[in-house]
Length: 214
Image 1 (cartoon, rainbow, N blue to C red):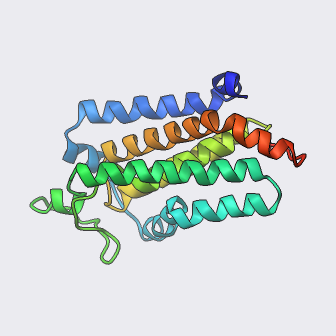
Image 2 (image 1 turned 90 degrees about the vertical axis):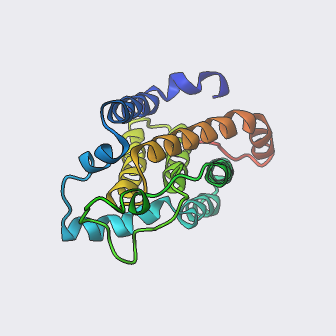
């Protein structure tokens, strides 16, 4: 799998590429504030409710739960990859947050009228870059895409991660650049773990007669 990772997962990488193109276009043609407003044309009650809960699918607890569930169902290679890629993407995201103090939208736009910040949900601090939820979601989506035999499921995994990323913008937690870099960190972490740990984990599981595929 190591030598043909891109070839066997072209659909997932294509979707990620299209996302990057769209995200970069927003960053090139809009200012930071205007891009945020462009991506938040209106809010609804059901939209607020949906994204407040959906964004938790990018939380570390969810990613670890998926890893443990895979482990219980004896998909231990995928489980190890899910947890290791989550830990790596989370570490990178937190290090970047520590050294790069970027204001979240509520702070950055405090002098500009914006009606859609959600009380008790929107954060007010300087740890916006990058989006940790997006990094975790894309790391998980990438590992699951790499693991499944039916690559058409990659569409669902990508949509899951994409909506987590958008939820961070919708909820007023992040800007487009935060989400874009979070996605890149997540996918890069998944690729690194899949390639770096490939031989070690496969040898470990081969001794127990377990398959690396979902």
